[in-house]
Amino acid sequence: MPEGQRKRILLVEDDGGIARSLKEFLAGEGFDVCAVAGQADAEKHLRDCGFDLLLADIALADGSGYGVCADAKKRGLPVIFLTASGDEGSVVAGLDMGADDYVSKPFRPRELASRIRSVLRRYDGAKGALPFGELLVDPEKGVVTRDGAEVPLSALEYRILLVFANNRGKLLTRARLLEEIWDVSGDFVNDNTLTVYIKRLREKIERDPQEPTLIRTVRGIGYRSGE
Picture 1 (cartoon, rainbow, N blue to C red):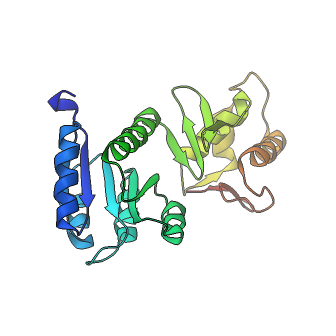
Picture 2 (picture 1 turned 45 degrees about the horizontal axis):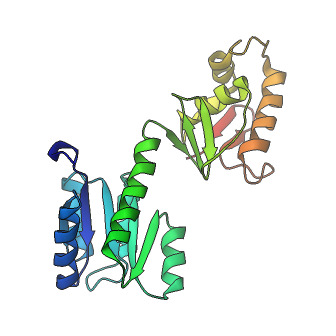
């Protein structure tokens, strides 16, 4: 891998022997690795340095891998956990909080390198896509996915969703929405048909359309976009 393309990994591991071995091995696999031992140092490096991936042990003598994971996810970084063999509870908790993968100790170094490359490929492929709740909205391809599967939308439904995805957490009036989507699909859109389209869109993107989290109604005004 050319020097300018080397991916940077932050390794958080409080076992010095494991950290040194992993750093040396991953360097040979074409990665730049910065190794730290605890949560405080990891969070400082995440603030001050640019990384492409976090590789962290869950159990740390100083702090917790969960805390470092939460910080990394806020910064849009993929996370792979290292965990003790058979510790199912830790694995589930890590995945629930957003970790992209995990590797149980003891592990084969080449398997770990393969997992790292796989996660990085997924993230590189998703660059430019807009995260919206559990959805990924790809404006370049005009495609919406959830858990890797495409969510089929009409042209107008897609346009409405794109407006919400570009305005996460904001209040959008009905007038603003009508202005954004006016005649985008060649159909006449008025206040009543907007309500119908919002209902159809919720049925496709919300886990529970009766209790929406991505498109919430603000009575008398319009809608609030989810995060």
